Length: 123
Length: 304
Image 1: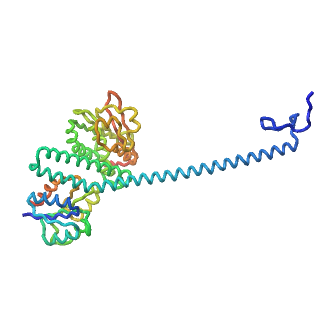
Image 2: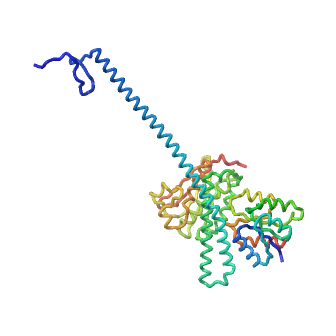
């Protein structure tokens, strides 16, 4: 079973994403802040990471820097989650820090996120 | 026989004092001069008071102006913050509804309808929030700072493709007519340009009868690039015309056609166009298409 780590500090969003990914056949691990996300990535070595950019303790950018700085995780697919549409700079910054893709909470339904995830599952 | 007194007469009604014979004595002249000086002093005092009063009023007006500007800015900042804060719960609402729809076989038919309506309402809420955010970005002038190089024809082609499904949902056809030869690159904030097109074209779609055409025209006019959007919509009533670009304004006639709306679309178009040094306007007459247009000065444009 493919493993996904979902890092999101909003409990409701985290739960609904978790349920959806489980329904789609993923093994889901969750993290509620950036520190937990880094730890979990190193421990469980997921096949894919959904990473919220705005999180306590460490934000998504710091997580990206740290993970991409580790040679073992150079190719780990990471999709960043934005709550702000129109923050082109955040998107650019995340992509330049090594994120593979992004989606915007208010704009993308979960079905699109699942589709994106499938693309990385087959890689 | 009347007595003739050899002394100054009482002041006559016209304010002058004269000798019975018309000549003034030295004393009288001195007295006149003193009075005149007094009067002048009083007048000067009055003028000074008026001047001080006027400058007080001007100062107060400037102060009031600043206060209003401050209040306006605070209001816009509030809209911005509130809209940002609304996004998380609204995303949750949207995804939770989607989760319900994902398992909708467990719902009875009534519940399925409720969930479908819930989903539509959540999407509407998101659109309203995005509109408010676009508005606050433009009001706070944060929208135009970041600039991008945009090829206008590929931008408009992509834009029309995006709008086609929306137009089709109202059985409209979008006809694009680009009267500009060759590539034209503008340095502009992409989102703001998108907002301008989107507001005019979605208005044209929303406010015209089904099965009609919406025309988008792009042309060069006197050092400007002019974008016009026409539809077969009803004539805008004369009393609504002067207010149509005001922020939050929605005329009676449009509210009858479409209930929801922030009244910010045209205001955004006007603000962005003017910020760029362009203009906006419209033509709406009986028996003719209704056309809204904006211009952007060509100085923003580098010819490749």
